[in-house]
Image (cartoon, rainbow, N blue to C red; front, side):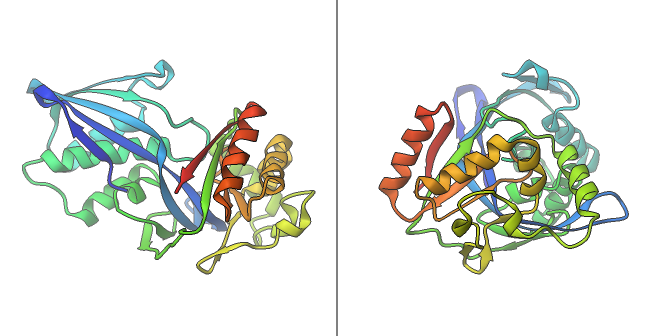
Length: 297
């Protein structure tokens, strides 16, 4: 997804790095290399979005990176890793001062770190004397994280492999309002995959009927242009964090036609056919102390 950019005086560039949700996420199998083959449908959302403030510096090479969350400072931040990977592949190491304003919650399944990495890659490629092709840039992004390649392209995409085999997807959500919920709980993706493997035996994905304990009429597959809203992680995540299961049930009780976890969680979303019901749902979630927002339309 192309990051929104604005340029301020003295060459400062501000990039909005959007989040994403997975309307559909099915774990197909664990690969010999330890990764997992997936089938997932990505959709970028305009908020919440991180912001990258990039200032060119005089002199040769080097990245100075600071973050609004000090715990994310340092060379292991995916922005820093993306900068190094681009330079190692192209020889282009411009001197940059970057401030990362984190607004996408970490551990929420919204792809914030991947979006940040895609933002710096797109910036570098746009300023490099010999930029990479779109295919080369996507391959570089895939080496950094499974979701990075998606954020380098425009529009919804169906992804296979570990998420790097992308195909544009003709998604039409007109007529729906989308409510995004960002609970306080956080989910570690490595834990989610490991627990999924342990509990599933890596056999066929768990049935949708195991995802919630109430509102059974609502857990039948709800399809968006042919793919059901589904997430293989829900079984293990909801078992460990029952408040998230109850939150999904709350979305249905407030009028959602479909709802699902995004990524490995903890964020989830609900699709409403009635915009007014969606607005009322957001108000009720906020009343309960939950971060809910109407994102689309």
